Image 1 (cartoon, rainbow, N blue to C red):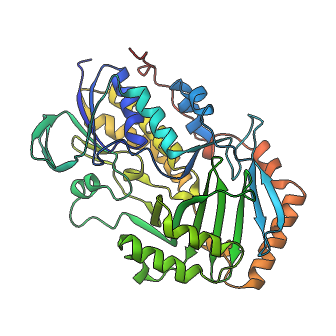
Image 2 (tube, rainbow, N blue to C red):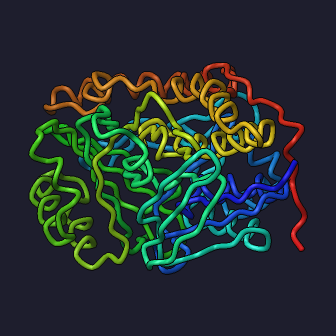
Image 3 (cartoon, rainbow, N blue to C red):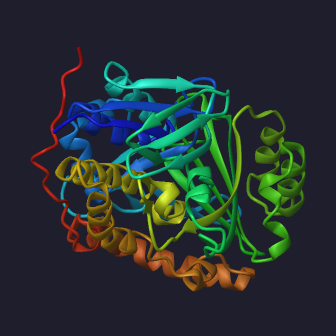
Length: 411
């Protein structure tokens, strides 16, 4: 097999995971990242189901274990902060993961792990991205944002849910790839206090509002403001300035109760601020010619699926396996990538917007009913029992075995 020259656009989770396998197979891999340095930031993510299996096959599971966040479970609370019920993480090593995974980790730590595992074999270029590309039967010609051009055998778009590679690859009349859930989220870090434990707090407020509070280290706590509102005029809000975003969330959550005053005060000075519309990316195709999509650029599942990072790892593994299987027929390789992975993606994207609306009630009466149900389930430990005796694999989808993929040893 002659080595391929491959450019991956995006240095988050999916791109380096793909680079790991391809570089280990002898391909010449370059990752370009638009940020000026490794973007080892972000909130808490997790591994589940088949994603844990891929991390194990990469030989990274022990390294990941050394960076895990100490989160024991999730508790539902009322406006006084009283715990109404708790779902503890399934840390038995058997069955499925619950709302809190056994493998909770900060995005920054996970990105660093992938970078450290690939930096000796992969060329990283920071501070620029793909400005334009053209392709023919033999190559992809890429023009970078700083001017120079180069040719590659494959261009991979691993540049997130707002992928510019996807937009350039798809025809102008392609359907909107975003499947909107009518949910918006802001999350940020504030100073930790003695009251912040290792169990995530989940609080509901009228008006379809929800707040998460979780701590990931001795000095910091994460705050999540979540709003269910399908008004179309909100779709532009995540693109507004940070000052405008904070003003919006302060106005919408100012009367939410519980520890909201503390959270809003912390919002003013936080150095870690993120605001997004919660969407899924759904497209009929993940490739065109020598250009292929990966991770959130291909199939963002949304934070409510809990499968984003797992989807990126599994997708990278499958794509690398199919490229190695048919390096001289990329059309066939990308078709098999789609055929193999799409059933898994369809399973992880199964989210019912109606259920999400029920989980974020409009009134105190609705919240009271939700809490009553949560108390009943937690009292009988039904979530833990379900996780313990469920299959680990999402949807029963079996992770393929690619004998053409192997771990490599860092030099």
